[in-house]
Figure 1 (tube, rainbow, N blue to C red):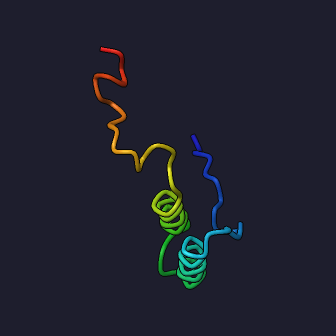
Figure 2: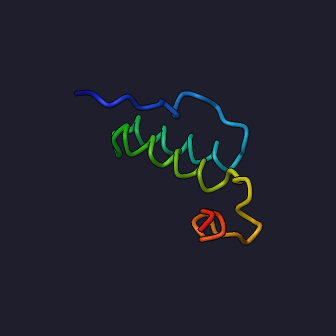
Length: 70
């Protein structure tokens, strides 16, 4: 069974930090230094690292007993 993977290497991204990672990963993939999955993973991690998440900076714990209503 094949796994569907979003191709993040072909889409230019607005954040310059993520775009730099994307271009570097794409170049390494084209040169045969890393696999497509590795390149895609690097871009996904950069997106996760540099894209702010809602509520992450507020000092709350997502799985605290108050959040779960316990």
